[in-house]
Amino acid sequence: MAFTAQDVKDLRDMTGVGMMDCKKALTETDGDMDKAVIYLREKGLADAQKKAGRIAAEGIAYAAVFDTVGVVVEVNAETDFVAQNEMFINFVKGVAEAVAKNAPADIDALLTGKYPGCDISVQDKLLEMIQVIRENITIRRFVRFTTGVNVPYVHAGGKIGVLVNMETANISDLNAVITLGKDIAMQAAAMHPLYLDTNSVDPAELETERHIQLVKAIEENKAKNLPEDKALAIAENMVKGRINKFYEDICLMNQPFVKENKLTVEQHVKQVAKALGGTITVKAFTRFEKGEGIEKKQENFADEIAKMVK
Image 1 (cartoon, rainbow, N blue to C red):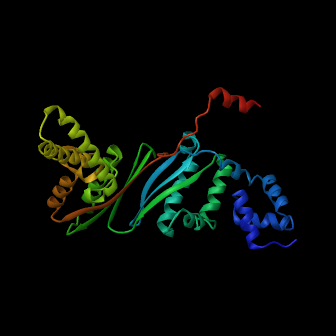
Image 2: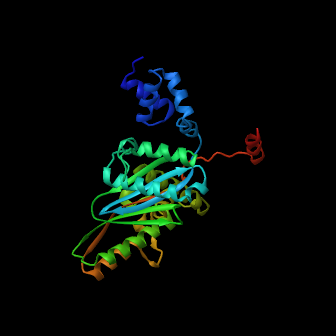
Image 3: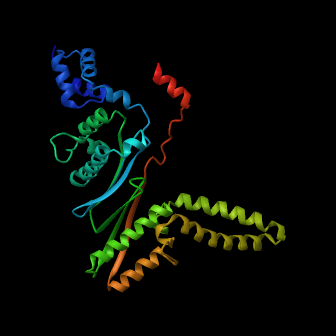
């Protein structure tokens, strides 16, 4: 029975197995899709598809620079034990290198690109890792910076990965810039800013915060029995101060610098740049924390043991 390229793709979609293995399975079974699935299961290749249904909320957030290209990635596994496995760690580093070298537009493009140091795709390497480690593994997200000075930071063995991107002018001491970048990255890891600066804040989020603080301020002033227009004016002034505090909480450049809290991060950057005789601009940063936003599956321990002994 003949088969087409679409049949190969359909088999891959059904099983999660690599294209070449799917093609071989269809060849060996004369194009019979059902027999091809059985063939892959018999070979131990289709197990990956069953594992793909399990929640992967552990893993590693990793940041690195390849030549001048900065990359931060998150790759998830099911257990923290696997995240400490040297094979898994090396796989994550390979994924980061693939992002740097292949310049993929998204996860799908990353998966179809070549995995560094071999002739297979990232997708096939991923499936190979699932087979060997026997846990679901997912490449969740990545960010890639190609210009300026990129400084990576990995906290607590991969719990948090941060990448800071800076532009400089008239500065020859690159080591001093990298030290500054590392300090900023550590700040981002510790203080969890959501935005770079005030200009980056989502206008809708800012408007919501203004409304909340205005209502709170008006309510707090009610006991003073002030005329309505005066109460509103006082409340609006209160909101200005509270919005500045809001910016301090969520904007990296507005936060007090952790090593010298009398300065903001922005002021510290300007101070360092002045000492080096040039200018430094923090253009962007990305902070990935492993598993953030993933709802972990909660199971009763006794029930889990019961499943294992069945």
